[in-house]
Length: 254
Image (cartoon, rainbow, N blue to C red; front, top):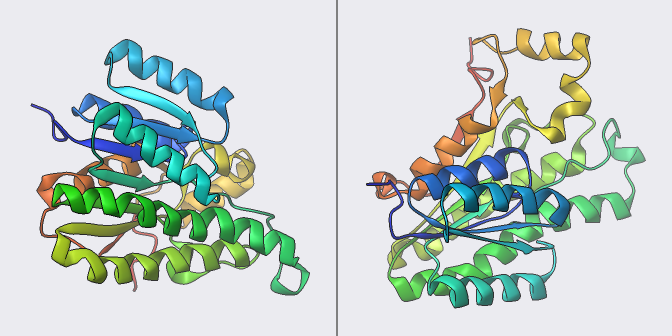
């Protein structure tokens, strides 16, 4: 028996990193998976690999999470393929320009990051929750970041977008708790993914990051994926509006 047997999950940003790991893990645990990503060149090999391991459990769809029409299409195709939606993993996100202090950040760059990260999460919930309400239950997991709690210099737009996800999650949890729809957020710290290569590929930076983590190693995509699996599953049936920090102890207060 899988932990997600009989459930249907939409996972955005599934072409690499955490999203790809979540898609494979959810399929392994019995879910039907709608894997989406802007980059079909990255997404298709992930979907093909899952299909070889778990036939007829996954479809892959090109998806711009910042576009409402795309979300409407994704939901329609998910319902057409699998008949329902039980789980949404809002994983897709971008970092944006790095090392830009607030006074150097352009409005265009701000909008780009906010539209993918914050607006993308909003649209995902807006268009999947009605299907969950018809089921009488559902689980949304929004992937935020440690920066959504603490902020980070040089990543103003990213921090703001992830902070918006954090509080949006809590508001949605209150709004839809009566429908038995749970909404939680995950806040990863330093996780090794393709999007963090620009940091971890530099030996000095990598060593500094590790030094800041009490466990003395960086997280991996599976660390986030297993947390998402737990929150998506019925094992977490009495958990909603929570923010789960996955940071190797980085935020432990002395």
